[in-house]
Image (cartoon, rainbow, N blue to C red; front, side, top):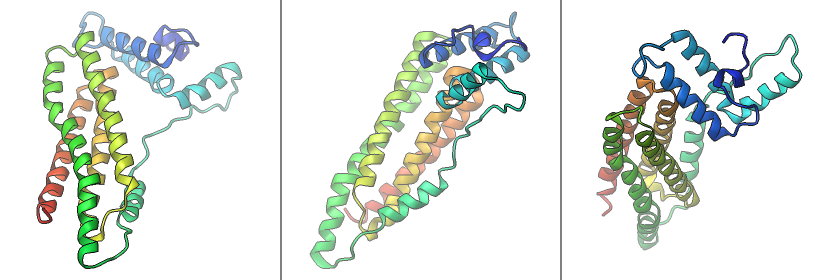
Length: 239
């Protein structure tokens, strides 16, 4: 397999769609995974398959790789895109969310009430929908992670959760929070970020079947739950 290009490794055409690439990788990962097929298990082949999917599974890396295949040159270095740290975006968003005009008396109370009703409550509903369904989804998948139907159902949960979090994040960013609720806003923002990272880790499990990603995703979800509960406890003082 060492002399094959990434498309050959995954046994697909260079014109394959991203969905076809993912499906091919999942089938090969299952075929050579020791928990699924001990007779065909091969760490070397799994490593080669993983390396191929790392490139072809990312549209940006795939574009560079396709260019290389068309015009190879000696000093070519495969481009890698690692998941960027969200620390800077966390700081920027928190600073933005805490910029609100200081007011007093009834105006300040109205601003707090408005933000809690139109931002905090709908965002928390979304977070709880994602978090509360997680254990049930994991339990269902654990019956047989190599069952395509169970995996597709779990993938559907991840896709729906990711879309819901994007909506929650957009809502959160659309309205600046009152300064008195800066701590709540910070907790919510970090919670959304941790959940998004957790979904990314769980997404990696759906193609690699590596339990490491399940455990990492579970830990990120646990942290998210703690942040959401802390936000709730703080908000209780305003209700």
